[in-house]
Length: 139
Image (cartoon, rainbow, N blue to C red; front, side, top):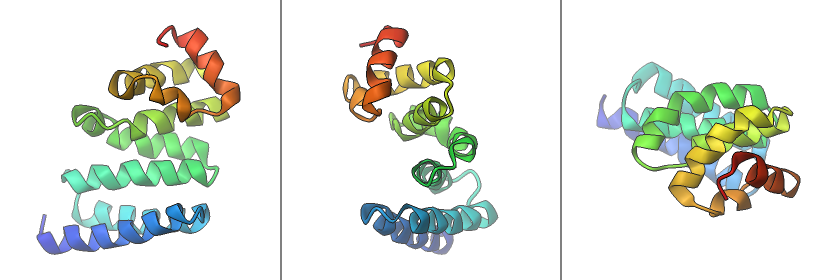
């Protein structure tokens, strides 16, 4: 991996983060997709590769592509758990909930709970929050 490739990928991701901050989720998704495609070509296995996949998975979720969000977030899951970052766990859990599969969400809510405690429940839709507290036996 070269510093140049990492810098280009970071610049692409930063643009996507800007769109996300403006709640322009579709543009954020497109921006993260560009960063992800670039990472696939130049950065596989580097830390930034997993960071980008984590962001791309979250962007897919925010843009309503829940199934793809799970797929992409799983690429970053192990790396993020090793560095105590909950984003892929939260993304996967929320996507499973949106897809009507709370059983699949429970393990990921537990992972995120282990990392951030009760704050995990603030990340869930109110309709899912109590169900997850009750069903996951973690909060």
